[in-house]
Length: 239
Image (cartoon, rainbow, N blue to C red):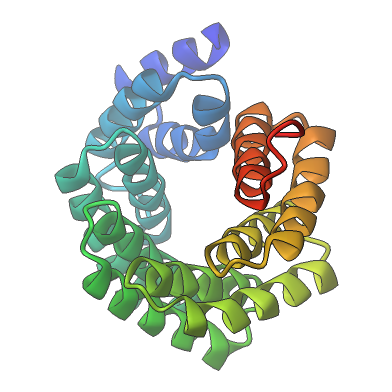
């Protein structure tokens, strides 16, 4: 990271602010994956302040990434402001795909503050745009977001076929992470409905994928979920 810090310092002290903003935005997964979220948020905020003259699409991308980082740090007012500005720029650019993604981000910000009605409305609108432009990845993400909102609002019956469609689409698109996620949720729904064998099957299949990729936090959660299913079945010795 030292080379990136040197580059950011140069950009901030009179170098190229646009390059700094592009770089800070591009390093999102590095900041998240290596637990440098706080430092990443700080650099991106500084690059956004220094990159006010950046092209609109570059600034919109920086704001979009900033919204996710602020959301993951639970600073929801900052996340809301960044996502709203990003959405406004993308709409002005007539960039419907990225406008839909910014709108979906606003939905997540609402969801994480337990405003599931607003979240569902934003996610539904975002999904409609993705369907209109034929964005398969956006449709996959959007349908999952809508179904999650339905679950939080107590409508698992409507959510289940949407998650099943998401699973089929994820398999078709070879999106392994989404396959694992949808299997986990379908297992949770099956457990809630008392279909313990189906729950175990989905959870075990999701666990296999997560283990293969070393997502140990998810593995722990899935093993806990499978233990709960076995307890509900009365198979305490196996759980």
